[in-house]
Length: 52
Image (cartoon, rainbow, N blue to C red; front, top):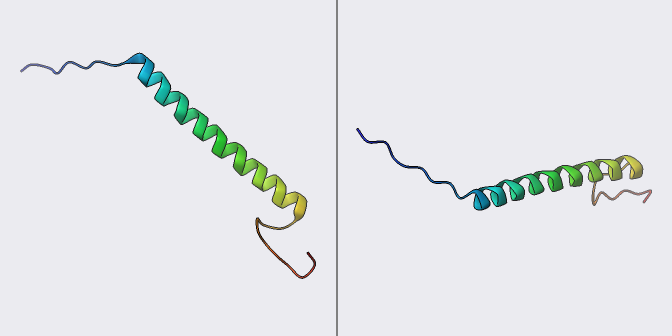
């Protein structure tokens, strides 16, 4: 039984990993900023109240 040959394009693979990491870091930073903003304003994003 013959085994398949696998070829990897290292540059494409590095690019895909770079985009995956970038997206993950961006999402994490945005979540941290949103949490900090909620803490500072004591209100959720787009939340409206009588006092504001």
